[in-house]
Length: 73
Image (cartoon, rainbow, N blue to C red):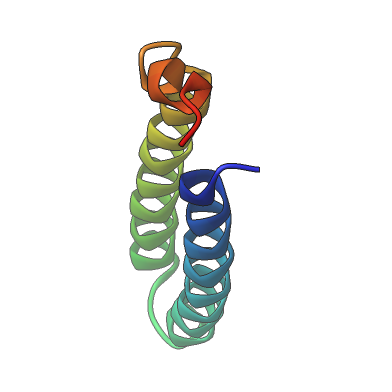
């Protein structure tokens, strides 16, 4: 496994853990606020998750980035 893919996996795991805690805190805070504020927070979270997912998927499926993985030292 290339080192850059391992680092990307570790970063994704840490980001997912942080996002889980943040979303949980946002949900708890939204219980005490009007429902529309909670929906606004969740829509922003969904947008950020979607953009992050697309960036990671593009990074993993990009053939131009794999060009240098074929070289041996």
